[in-house]
Image (cartoon, rainbow, N blue to C red; front, side, top):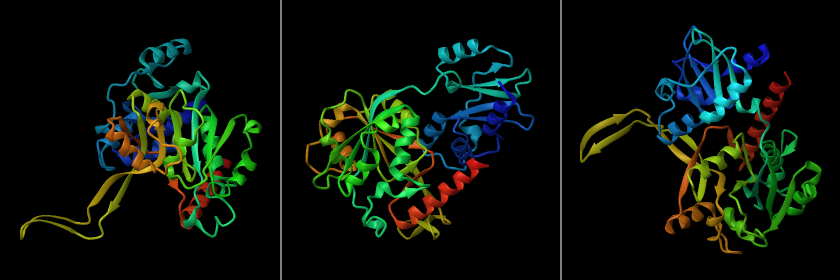
Length: 358
């Protein structure tokens, strides 16, 4: 492991005084899917994986929760000097994607990652992108351009989605089009110039965020990913699929934790008696992120040509006792639905490009 590699992993180090909020920020910035909690001398106290973060979010833990409450205090580690073959064997046997390297004093000296040994595996699963909406709230930008083709960082929004999925091993895409759909077809064609396969389904009438599923020619053999065409995010679509299949779900919805603070003091009463007062309390809820994983057995409940939105579809699946679950996201995410959202997304992407160029 080179000095440069070791320095890169140092970004995953955080102190025990850090919070869940700090952990999520670190995880999103490093993209290593692990955090190393270390004391002031650099000794490893515990690890927090991407999965630990998602479980904490599902439990509803607050952003001020100490990382020591969610970390694994006894992670598997490897001493300095162990050869790569032995490291790989340890990771395979224990089904680990990350393995910290420590010295005799348990001071962190590096980190092995599964990607160090293998390139991104190819996935045959379909990625369906819903790109047929009118984008009324984004007018005048969408008067002569479909919303997914609006430029962010010099590229259309939908191109960000496709490029990210491709980098994660996905090569088969289906795009649902309607409003100004020919612009999308002209831009991507059949995808061959990009090393991917792109097919299209045409909505003659608005079918909602789930209705276009009924236009797919053949029921896929494997689970598929569905994404709204106006969502920018750093989500790992492969991790979403793995989560979906690990829990044997019929439909999985990616959800984001949304926090909001009440602008006033909240008074709790029983009759006329005051039983408690909270000064501007903060509330947490999960919101739909517009990204899903669906099993083929769920798609049979979509009726061809009938409008249906995803929340309605999930409710339908629940009535027939299909398993619907939530995949908690912590990755950066933005739904570009209004002019202010587009402006902010463009500013954020510009800042990101500047940092990458430094």
